[in-house]
Length: 294
Image (tube, rainbow, N blue to C red; front, side):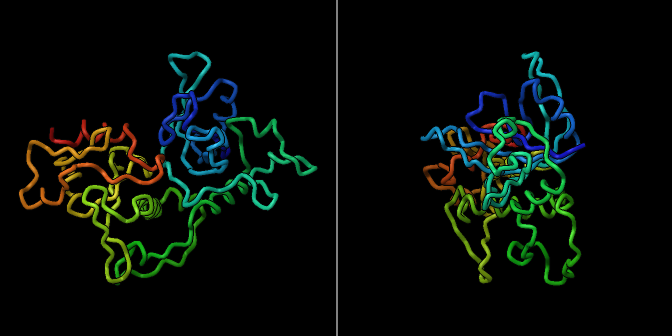
């Protein structure tokens, strides 16, 4: 078993939904199989969709666990890798830092790039290099008070844990998801536009999963939305939802009279600035079909 790097892009012609599936040709099957059961990291190359053909970050941006590989029933020479435990990095990790590659296989002895290795969309990476990559991308040192991880009477946790164990820890993932969603929405409720900061300087807005964790919803910003506590309650109970154009939908079952005043008349979501952080249609559809009281 080994860790691996998967190259992904929104402009890809492959049938990807990177939080849960990665589509690839037969040429990478053997390498991908070696990573089953292990964590992989996603890399976004320079070529990407957007206003510029060179719009990609050229950086590592997320981690996930490879569960299994299945043949594509529609294309005999392609496969699907199915994943869980998706988690975006706190910040993208550049491919090259001060002349150093996190993947040593990408660098020749003379210091130049090994373009043959770099051109492979699935490539294996030694465990120590993978760990260094995760540490560069994830904030492993947390301020528990900043994000409300602990109560005043909780004892502090001093025992360090390996980075892999932190990545799969539910507490670690909850804090990362909350931070990422709050940052994406500027600590502002996407429905009401309220931006509340308490006396200790902490934002009061909550990070809601659109497709919840217990229903296999991933910890990605595009499966999240920033909501005040009351609106979060309405959303979880299916009294409000959102369509693919980001309009707020009110359930015929009725929003309590004293709460409907929270929803502006235009009934339009306030969206993150970056398109890649905006709610994905796949998760919005799941909520409408499985939670919304239509």
